[in-house]
Image 1 (cartoon, rainbow, N blue to C red):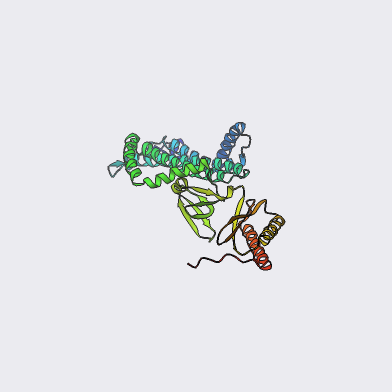
Image 2 (image 1 turned 45 degrees about the horizontal axis):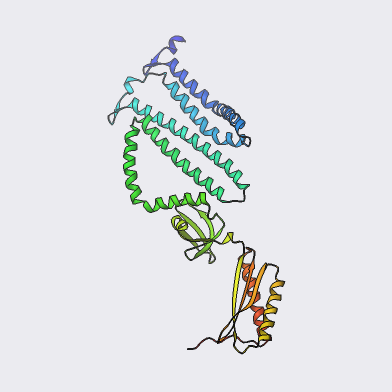
Length: 356
């Protein structure tokens, strides 16, 4: 039996091949058990410093990438026990096959490790998003999504650099020097996009508005549906979808309608010059009584504002809490009809427009 196992095939004994195959198969079969046990140990260590740590979610997210990383790493370590056969050490595109296989193995190992890091970032984002959902500020969720995607891009770039360095022996210093020159040229070409990106950071941290707010900027009024890295999307009252660059949202004068403490309405009545003072006084009192009867109106002001040659100017002004726009429009319409009915009842005419 020993003589049979000591037979060599492709510069290695059958004993070595069986040992390597056994180790790899054992790791594959016990992969899920081992990775789950390691994930639980990591979760317990994190839980000591993080009281709200979700162990079940953490294990579910990292068990697959952790298992893949373990299988790949142990397989590479086991295969190093074998001598590479001289008969297979051919040259492809000026590179020996042994070097090519080692480079591929290292690249796959780095990819598996990068996948593991990305899953950890997903877990942290899910936990932070759960906390943010308890807050009344919806901008926290948008900020978490932004930094989750940003960190994933950074981890992806680092992963590519590690593959170039460990797998292909590329000098990262020269690569970074080249990237800095190329990056400067790209920065000049994409100046406007970079300004919008910086403006998105200003929006996230300064919070002049958040998702769901109604804002008015550059004669555009709408509800904020999404704050992106380059632009902000608004849904107008006409149900159109308007995209505004973030730089304009920051540099322009912006009115956050949702943050108003009150909504104001003003109505100017130009009464005919022949209107008797008692009718004007009576109209003003009737309008006041109507405004008092409307529960949504907090304060009001009705007065004879000006006396002109052409007629009399009566100003009607009222304030409501920041109620729904349809309710506010309904109050205005109700007031307008009331004034029209009263003016008809009291035979009060409005001032005629100047035809000259």
